Image 1 (tube, helix red, strand yellow):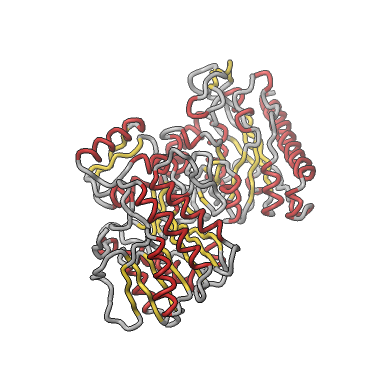
Image 2 (cartoon, chains in turn red, brown):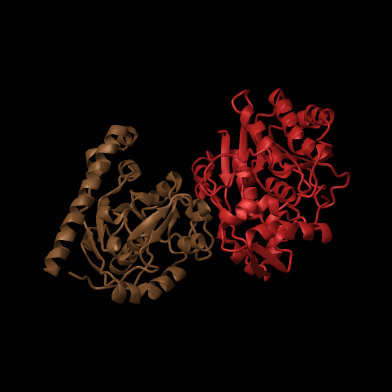
Length: 325
Length: 263
């Protein structure tokens, strides 16, 4: 198998590239990211090739796929490049999150060697509502509220773009809706939330939250590459616990606050201190929780979450190599 | 007949690794609540129950009971009774507005309650859990005192689930709730936290009326119908009517027994 990985210099991308290089069935990895200098990638390894590509430019995507990817005989693509900062929005962010996904898919469909496309999507695409089940399977409604923040809308649009291409060509498409990877550099809202010494949460609510480890996320992608089918799969992590316990595990102070006060308080904090955490992104989740159901991934991909995060002493396990954003 | 009481255990508990299941059940909290309610159960409501042997010792099963009183004290007592007399952890299926109610949503989740969505209930049955359903829902609670022990709107979802998941249904009757906390009226314009109405009870707290619980013989709908029959509305409606009749018969028997005791 010859695999192209986008977002290769992100914490997850680095681990994925390393895992693929350790996989006997993988002959070649073409790592792609925006940075000219991929300091953390093991560039010296012959099986690894790196290319700096701006995926927001359709020409660059085309040239990547019909240049180095064709030369290397790439047969599978893992699209892992998403803008991670929740504070940024606008056209350029949308171009990376959505347009790049669409362009990659369209080019892959007519590519001579690529036969498999794996999109790392996110569980944030699901609408979390009080009337929805606690366990979210792949058929649950997506967050299609036009008032939702761009961070969410982009993820939903990228996900649906991939879903809508399934069965349209000989390209097999797998969409992995991964639970939140609770780690730095991953765009994890929860990670940013627990960076504060005092964590405010809605008074009277303590929802169940599921988080994913790097290792399980990498396992899921590798299994998706090795499988033969296509479809949408939820990828839950091995840790499901109440929000209050997550706060406690990080040694933070948990302060319940009446719900209506939380949005202005966190907005004020964003203006003054500049944290990444956005309460509007997490409002529903901090009230009603929702845990992605991995039954389909277990049945069809053979995925099962094995790697629990080390709480709380194992912060090292949560810490990923630094990477340019 | 009173069965010997055993300490509550949680054999069907699926720990997700941190002492909680995926729905938020926390056995330690459940035990604490059980201890807190023990004197209320024993001395205030003086619960007498019989027929626990009808509750399957393991595997998926559905407990179906009548509902009454201003707030679901009867449901609480029924679950407590199952917990104290059997080795099962009942998973009460609660109204869909409960997740909106601060504090209550968390307390209910910690003691095993699950919001009544099809996916939630199906998952519990797939896991072999004992679920408790009150098919009347809120229409059973807060009904006028003159309609006490008359079953109200009877939803059919429990019958469909029983057929589809091949789970026996254990009918149950709870007697005492209607007299314990009768409702004077309901404020229909109140929809706080999504509630359909606000019940106005006769007294601020439930009266110390003795509660009697009787469990009936399991009804195994899956022996009469294949799983596909769960898609047939006529079959499901007939099966639900059969369960309703069983609960009505238990209510009548238990009320007669209560009258006999008084006489």
